[in-house]
Image (cartoon, rainbow, N blue to C red; front, side):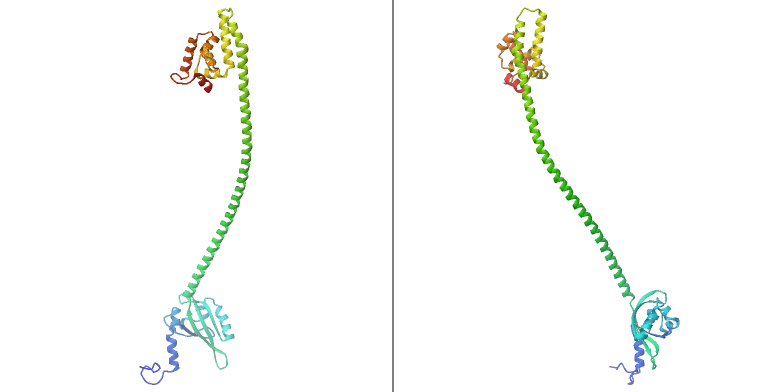
Length: 330
């Protein structure tokens, strides 16, 4: 196996350090450069020339007249960097660089001063790394992080607003619930009071109805006991036919006026005056014979009126007591 330090001709003489350095310089993947103090490009390797858009190091050296304005996007940055290099002998920094076509990229440089025997800077040299992809990724990540933070802030703000609205809604609901409970309590109190009032009202109505019935009973009793016997006796006296008619009408009208029963059954069954009088006596438990004696009718005539009353009340053929029906319905 051939020694890599031998020259290409195969001779045993070793390759010089200058030749080794030249090979490394030309074949390095990173950009390597040398620049003058004034800012001219003294030497670059092919990798650096290619990074800046030149076909060869020679083309780059011919075209670059002033590094500070043709390489640095910020013209003042090279002066600031050189002050650090002069003070410390070296510097590492990131900067925005310009390519041949004017496009921009990000680069990382490690540079040091090469001084002469008197300690004065002869030139600067260093290496250059293209960080454009890395920086673009960082910027994308930063933009994504900023967007995420913005969205988190917006979401947090929305959640805060929702929480505020929810708290207000809960407070409003609690207020409504308190009002509903208060109203429910008031309604219960009023319901109890209304029930007591209804009980009192029912009692008063029942008493009024009882009083009304008692008044009706007394009126009817007085009419039956005091007036009707007089009319009956009057009818037994010698009267003209016209007087008899008037007395008969007077008797019928008295019974109709003083008997709510007669008014109700008259409106319901459309009974004649004689049928009304017969029905009234039946309701009071009078027999046909007793009714005939009171009304000066034969028992057969009373039974005839009984049958007509049952027919008008739809009781024909039904085993229902006429007296019980009148008592129950009227």
